[in-house]
Image (cartoon, rainbow, N blue to C red; front, side):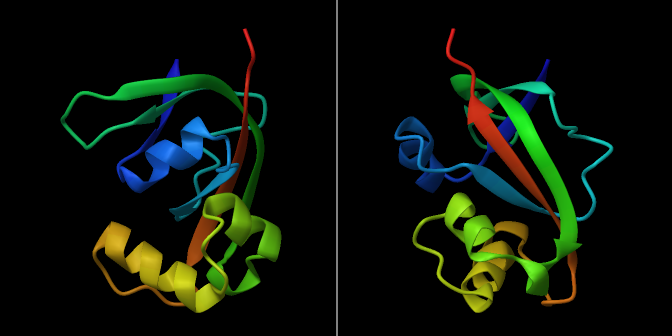
Length: 115
């Protein structure tokens, strides 16, 4: 089974409260995640233990440029993000590199599977 892992501890509470409904990842991730995939939604740093929050399903994978992000995409990523410039700043902090509005990203929508 694949994991949809989140490095930042910021996401832990958003995932617990089910406020986070999608993730924005740099590049085209359609070869990694597909609609209908079952994944473990986890939190943890690279090369460190991970905490499984829940089992989820990939609902939709959209590939677009950052400038094409919608308000639904922004709010699903983080309810506190209000603009494209906010998401660019956030992605720069996560990926530790300069990000442009024209860069390609994948928006991966997911939802919990209640067992």
